[in-house]
Image (cartoon, rainbow, N blue to C red):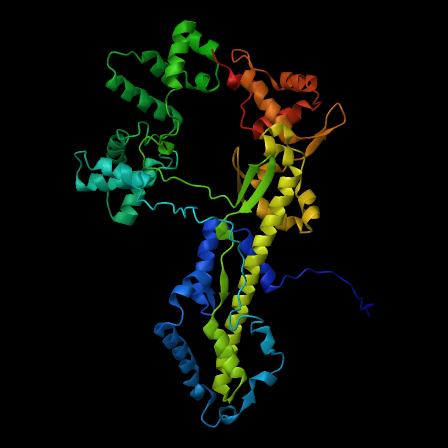
Length: 511
């Protein structure tokens, strides 16, 4: 027989309550989505209301009718228990129900007005309530299709053109092979065509604005733009530009200017003039704002930092603090239930009302806790980076990691991460995502701990001030930083350079 033994293992597990899960979800929502989430909760839970809107509609006949109808629906459910069900005639006392305490639901001060005042009124009467205008904006695809209508195309060709436009990526390139578009047209629209016919329509799409749209790669995109320039400026000569892109494209993207000069026979002056023209072209025509067709994206800050009399002041956007409360009618209904003995159906109604009130209270608590968490987290960040917020000087940023803030405010690191990764703060120097203020630290030659962001700022300045005809290599940048008192390895310089989006020295070279 095998030796079977029972062993007892003690294991620690962290289980979140539904309320904690709800808070975590609310915490990571940006303002616009928070407003939508609150709206959805109010629509789904009649026991929850916005006090501003409820004041306007309080005690209307429609509300009373709705409440009566909800209770009637429970009264009419007696049949669900069966005609001979013992529950039908059973009486009960809601006040004696196990686990129920009416004091948990009734207000302590104002009668039936259970509410959390989760905002403060720190605005003067002169402040304007600004509402962003809502405008209709044409999509980029609609903008192109509108232009397509001005060309002499058959109905089938227009359909092919619309399919081509629908397959353009965000940069305005046609990354899908023409052969696949032919298949799409056959299987989804029952249009039998050929690659030649699709290419014919593609040529029309490539004539639309902005120039370069519909290209299949960067080389074709630049050639389309140069061709358009030549047509619009017949007295200018773009032949060398076309030759460089058409015959020396690999050398161009790698900035091997000496090879281009040798291959084309152009002088340095001619080559520089041609390269200057090419660099004016748009490599991402689909991302162009000249057409006015791209939708604008606005950042809504959650926090605002001001400098007043040399001191920092922090405030939250008022939309983080909605004034929510439990519906008075539902509180009144619950109190009435507690004073009477009714049938099983009324017990069901009482349970329904109590559940809705509980849900409303939990949601209000979660919103209030969200506001508190946001404020103390941002306050801790502001205090730790006080010198930066007072001056705007990146070199004043201190090394700071999530753990530092979590320990200061007594929250879990994951909670601080949710705030830092999704919230913005507006400062006198711009609007920033909170996570940009977090960085590791290193020790300089003087033994002081400095932020990696400070080093990156110095690295950016070095690249900006370098001789573009002979850009600094990573090793040379390492030596410059060392001279300034920041001894870091060459591979670290390369890592920071890549994080800043700075290309290698060879690609930064200019004539």
